[in-house]
Image (tube, rainbow, N blue to C red; front, side, top):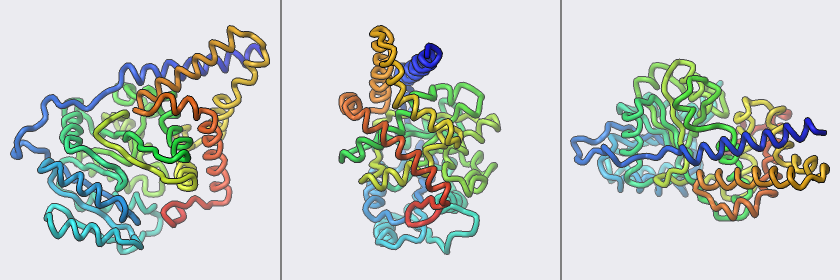
Length: 366
């Protein structure tokens, strides 16, 4: 039993240290050195893959156009939407020549939809920088300038941002925070940029900025055309090629409401939750067991000192993660238990989907 306690408390301590480091050494997008005139603006192609996004795409395009002249073009790839997505885009494009719509002729065999859409977008882009955005993000007018400035200053080939998550319903609040909990308690984000190891890599497909020459050299979405977690795999691959990658979170300039209900959240997280653990269901399950049921052996010992230490580590880890992710500390502490059970549900549903070969997203099997 004593060895089990050492493992449980030791792992909680590791999470504590990682979460604290992510809070203390959190990198921010800076306003220093931003271009001031149109002539100095950055040569950026904004690339947006969409499928049935009529409720979101108009708002994102509005955000981008309000930002002014800090991009070269906006290209949207409509991946066989069945709603009014194309109509919304064409309405905006008719008023601004920088906005273009590409329409899918069908998904080629051997590709996943978003991967193919991003590949097609990159082929059409003309900018020196390629900014991939999901349709459900909202951005400030300074975001693009700040991202390019950061890439130039840090000499990066890829910058990816985990947007600040907007959560309205209880169902969102017990599911979405798990993404940041896993990320910020297991991976010291500064090491994504500073350490050469590909295992220390992360990215979020909701927001990724590439130098176009690097992207085209490796044709990254084509290389990972079948991957459900192409963003993570791209980041890891670039590090194996000695390219510089950075991943940051807690950025006020970009927000996203990922899911609107429990079904969407479970389906969405189930398709890629194990990729945080090297796509290992064993490691994912062990993580869930240790972080959810680890309190039981601690309670059995009857030691107040061990229990207090363990609870402090667990609670403070959640506090640090919440602060780094710009989430409510009180809310995440109150919902800690249901959040843990939902993490288990993601892993279970992912295992079921893998067994039955029925991963589905956006009305497609992936």
